[in-house]
Amino acid sequence: SETVEFGEIDDSGQVSSTVTITNGGDETLEIGNITVTCGCTAGEVGSKTLKPGESTELTVNFDARNRSGQQHGKRVTIDSNDPTGAKSIEVDVWVLPRVVVEPGLASFGQVVQGESKTVILSVKGLETDFEVLSASVDREDAFSVKLLKPKTSEREHPRTGETIEVGESLIEVHMSDQARVGRIDGGIRIETNDPNSPVKTIRVTAVVAGDISAEPTRVSLKALTPGETFEETFKLVSARGIPFEIKKATMVTSTLSSLDRDQIEVSYAPIPKPEDKEIEAEVGYFVTIKGKATESMRIIQGSIVVLTDAEGQRVVRTPITGVVRTQNAAVEQNAASQSRGR
View 1 (cartoon, rainbow, N blue to C red):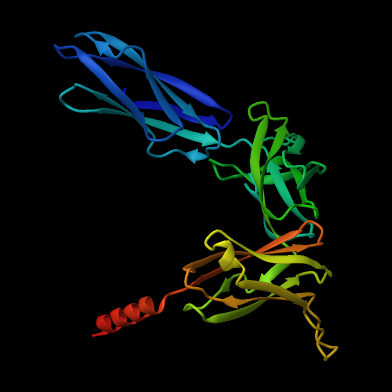
View 2 (tube, rainbow, N blue to C red):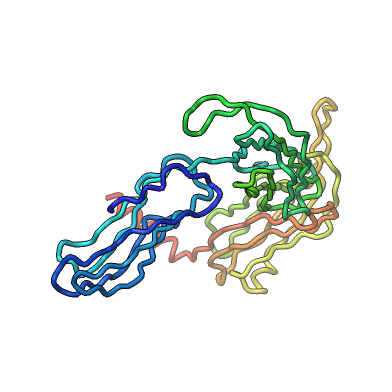
């Protein structure tokens, strides 16, 4: 057969079938590589050398986990010394998802540090008595889960499209206000009473932005020449208006020598309160970078590192970039620009 008919199966695991390969020629058949279209199918052959008239069995496996609906374009291709070329075996299968979790990803998006947030997951089966038995998360430092009371709900049958009555469980996924700054990824394990789909797992993710942020987010110095002075200022402000103190501010870079770094000074001062009391005051600091370009400076690249007393955000980094060109280099670049213009 050139088609493996699995028909309708559920998404609980792997199914297998066999296909007979026969050498119908008058010379030895050498079977080469057996390739698949994706990780969901795999082929194993009993023997790769067949004399005229001999046969062997090819095992075709299909892993239905995390699949849904009609599977298109799935095939196993057999390379050999057959002069007519490679042979392909199509895999015909329709996967019935017994348990569905919506949304399929517990995404909190971007959250400001210190804020808490909750996402509700709906888990439905195919029977009225379906329910989630337990739920757990592997990032307890940032998330917690709570299983709510199951109820009867409706679901569209994946294949027929008819509305059916099923059991539904809700899971409350809570993100802690103590979550660290940065991207957080984890997994939620859901155990159900469906014997064919006892465990489902989904990802949980969030991006925690620091309460203290820079405005603008990057310091860009103009093109400098040796001996030229520069000065740029940006703000560090608390999004929630929580007072904080700066303990130290410095520039960290690997592109400048220690002597060149000594030419750059970083200072800071509190943002003054507006005279108009109706205008909401910003809580934060002005941070200023000033210095003088030298002959040995070429690329200025690094970060302005600020140490604070803010809980959970002791360090705030703001990127800084710049370039220093010698007079000759500047003249040559200007001449090249003019030449291109002509």
